[in-house]
Image (cartoon, rainbow, N blue to C red; front, side, top):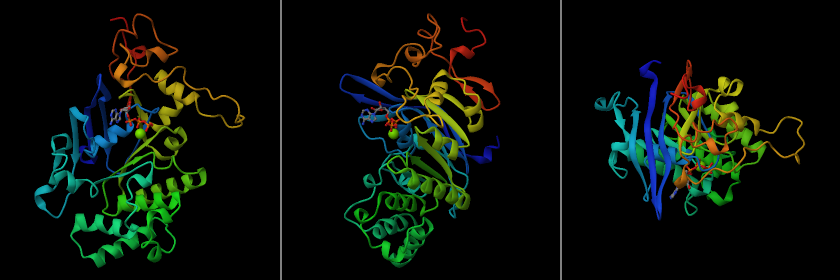
Length: 344
Ligand SMILES: Nc1ncnc2c1ncn2[C@@H]1O[C@H](COP(=O)(O)OP(=O)(O)OP(=O)(O)O)[C@@H](O)[C@H]1O
Ligand SMILES: [Mg+2]
């Protein structure tokens, strides 16, 4: 890989929550990279640490949560300020309320959340909220910020943006609100967009429109996307490279074609089997994964997936923590079945 393409290097990230009665290891040694302009899919069942990974990158994790280990090396955009050209910052080392992260957040790394009402303020018009983002980062006049806001609404396909800009969030449909969220995330031209299940609250038609819009905007602006979802169909449509997460760690990483054609980790294979087949009647039970995701405060010994794994080897998988094993060019898997000498 060409190092100049690197945008974000996540190395052994650990984000834990100290709660009554113990520690929740929500993210526990996650490693991956995102290159400029690339879409990385982050796949996994509920509770496996996808959102906490996203919040950690933006330094939005608040107590009782804390990043307790690892690095988040972010390659900053070359800016007019020559001193920052090519700068690589470890986001973990920044003060989460300090100047540098506030400069980066919104302008260089932006996030779209699952439920737009959590990040749109109901008491301000969408125009005011969009303009504020521009003024905060670019020190332009109110008039210019308003024009930029209208332009950004036009770009995400809001009908009659000149009128829409003075509306309040509740006056828009869910799909339109999600478009506004995307406009807000992209208005300062970030190099990384973290999209956390941006379409799960939407109906299928609106979902398809929003996904198409994101792909179009990515082609125009070239930003990288970290696309968080538990939906394999969305992964197939959006991602180039995929990490599969289970209980706070990455269990498999591959390019999207390899992952769908030849998944290796028993967890990934189980996820693949759980997709409804074409022609399957809707009342037929889906082939869901056996068992429940254990509480992250209660992670099993050995391989965390072993109690649910149909291929687990007794005496091995319940004892030994699997290392990340390279099995192909850009294909890694955290599973003892792929160790050269599994009993060693
Ligand atoms: N504020 C908090 N306090 C304690 N535990 C938390 C907190 N926030 C998240 N967690 C725990 O961290 C783990 C990972 O949560 P996270 O929200 O990242 O999961 P997720 O993969 O995004 O799931 P989903 O698909 O449901 O959105 C979960 O077990 C969750 O309960
Ligand atoms: Mg989540």
